Image (cartoon, rainbow, N blue to C red):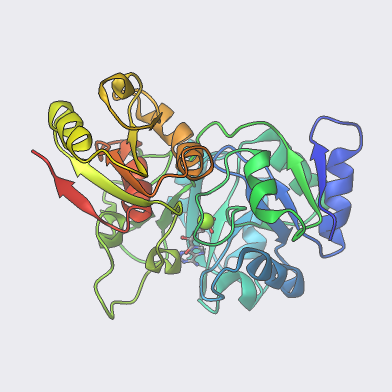
Length: 341
Ligand code: AMP
Ligand code: MG
């Protein structure tokens, strides 16, 4: 299959993308979080193609994207007060809400669960495509399963060229990590995946919100994942990533003593000067928004530019948006953390 690369602001591009989606095809679309791989969410056969294109396990459900709040009433059995309050504060934006699903949701979308994940993105191109297609769009991140999520159209082309009908280029993503996922299908509400909307912000609206164990820890053997995506090693470059938890001084010491063939560093801006190995920086130490925006591109560069075999990464502060950065990086590292003091 020939994959068309469409510039989102070119005349007719949105309509071309919408027509592909209406005909059961797949389009890579920009959102404020990461690029998504979209299909008509109400067409089970179209949604099944997403799993094939990504090599995604069929038991990992997808997020359904809407462009007007009212569309949620068709997708879920009931809209509780808590969902309305969250939507009022954070939609459109990088927050996904899980609720019991309606009969409209094909099993392919919910991976057989009784719930559905719904998001109203703020990206103008995402909203325009949903509007033009006239249907909600199911979209996971537009990467091959296991790879870092795409934050540019070029990342999507790298993974999906020849596998999908088109990619809409709307420029780089402003948040850079996937949406915050919160479930309202149980009491109290629980954070399943941290993102651009922080746990503190959710608690500010809902009061009590629990954090799922899997946000910070590997899933215990045999334990069932609340959000099936939590089971798999994720966001991973080919290189073996190891997080070094400790001061900058101890980080530099450790990396320089372990310098050698294929060794590289993933550090904060400016720290590379002190390191005797090739390095990629992913934002300022104090700026977790910038770290979120740059992390996935940095993980791809470690493979493509440095051909790194072992990567020593600085450990993000798991607070605010930093919790999302930490959550992605520990998965990229397969939970390998060394305490360097
Ligand atoms: P991605 O494929 O990277 O866009 O991630 C979508 C995330 O939403 C994955 O972690 C899914 O497991 C999660 N998700 C989608 N639907 C549900 C659901 N009904 N219940 C729990 N988690 C869900
Ligand atoms: Mg993903």
